[in-house]
Every structure is written in structure tokens, then in C-alpha cells.
Length: 94
Image (cartoon, rainbow, N blue to C red):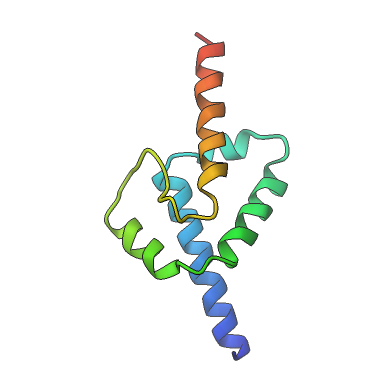
């Protein structure tokens, strides 16, 4: 794989991850974590090693928003934990 092809692959997967974060609405929860840089780095590593970018792209094209990421998403569980944190915060402030 050429350097340019690797760069394009990285950019594509980074774009997919950004869109997934927004689609499942966890950006605020992610950014509010004290360790958000490490969490984001681990999420990016999982996304970069994903074997389903075409399925991800197709799924994202069909969803402006969603309650959860598709089950094949390597960050599905992390997104669910972040959504749980959002709900716990709401209850704490209620």
C-alpha cells in the first residue's frame, strides 16, 4: 500500500468516526471526560483497525441520528458507556 493510499484510508476512517460520534450523539459526553484524549485515541485505534468501513459508510448515509451504533462497530460498547454516563449525569442534576 502506498503512503498516499494509507493516508486516504486514515482520513476516511477518521471521517467515519467523527460522523458516528455525532450520529449517536456522544460528542459532549466524550469531550467532558477528564481523560477524553486517551478515550478518543483508543476509539480511533479501534476504528482504524475496523474491517467494515464500507458497511459503516452505508449505515451512516442512512442515519442522521441513532440511539446506538451498529453492532459491528468496534466502538459500539464505548458509545453505550458514554450514553450511560450522559443519562447518569441527567439523573444526578435532576
